[in-house]
Length: 330
Image (cartoon, rainbow, N blue to C red):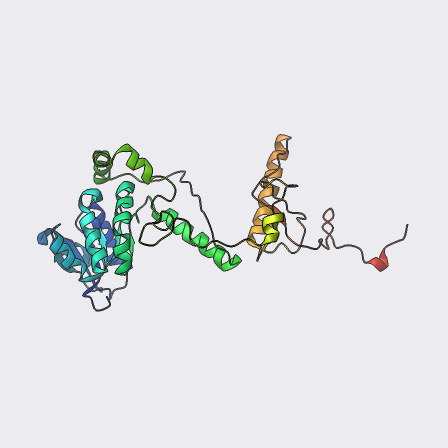
């Protein structure tokens, strides 16, 4: 793939989203990047290139590639580049042929769709062929998905680096989005239900609906989350396990599985960010409840034993204990 003419081809560069993408590439990516703008009209593409020049005169100017939404032309375009970015929508109408070309030509692919039923469809259809040809296909990199993906990646990476543990699930909620849909986006939403049934739309929204591994997409794959950590007999029987950076975690019949205790807020062994965060959040909660005259205990998911030995600190005074020689006998 390194011998291909371009590193990036932007397909649909003269459209609404395509122009923003072209401007971002021009102003932010390395000036020696070999890239091209692609679309159906040479004249419109040439005008776009002229508009981009003043934004960064020192960079290599993009090539111009004319391609219709025909199989042969899309295959030829895909073979010229390492990565193809498609901004041509609605994707359920115009995107499948582009994905087909990239998957079969071993070309990496990005798009900005929000059409979940279509994404589920192409995963089921092209996962095997893309894997066979070493093509990485990443749909939905737009505003609906990129913040969640990037936050999840950052969180999982942090937990892996600091605690040396995998992350099974991340749940994110969007409270406010300061953005307005384009005309093309509105047309896509309205047309989506003409192509897909309500059930297909609902199925595409379910958790893990687009997870090729979870759903067993591909030859010879098993349904499930892959290899899981095997529990030792102590954990299976008593619910006790030790996690580096967290200490000893327990769930038992004596303590609700939803109960979380920090035995000693003054324990100097509480060094991890999770320890400090848990302590801070609980104190904040207690202060708020104290203002209301009530107190409600916090119930996160684990009974927590930060250290097998008791703290040398006195929890009431936040001071070390008096040395035995200095204690007075009663």
